[in-house]
Image (cartoon, rainbow, N blue to C red; front, side, top):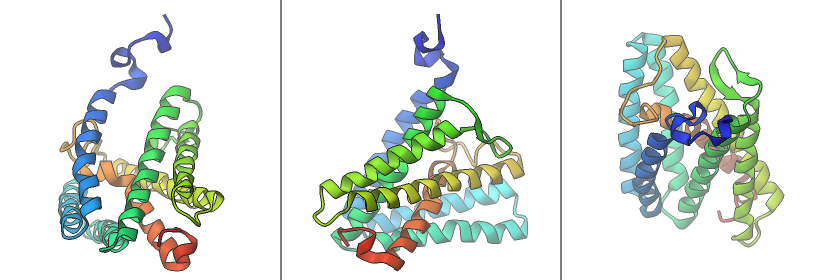
Length: 230
């Protein structure tokens, strides 16, 4: 019997998939609702997430002063970027929805490709489980999902949106590695155990951290040239 024929729950490649999926779906509902309704609900969600992330960071780094400053910047920048990107209008809702779709696609693509194909490690000293196949699978799916917006909004260019999606996906994967490096530095497996299958909030949003900052930079510099619905 080969690995492909072993049920997912008994196949080490897919270990922990069930709790990950259930947790992701449970979290997606309030997040999507907050994105749709906007302030004050979205702002409140981001503030709550920032507070939990701050607690997890202090817990992880054990209050060393320099790392506390780094953590404050690491948490405040993406949270501020997300609140600014969402704003109060429909364009902000579409922008954040697009961002989440791209980041989630990159995460799903990386997980599926990495677990299925395996192969050379992406950064073995930082995150031993991540592979180049996962990286390529993640950015490929994210670019495809990102470009799909051009089929919905008039004036959207498939190639341009695919390129921005690619940039966001790469940023998301770098963000993932940054958090992995921090955990490895402090010799902890997860930032907390609040989310079954994912660890803590920092573990769940690590890819979103740098992606949000990257999209904010794109919007600031390119505006409608980056996202056609702005």
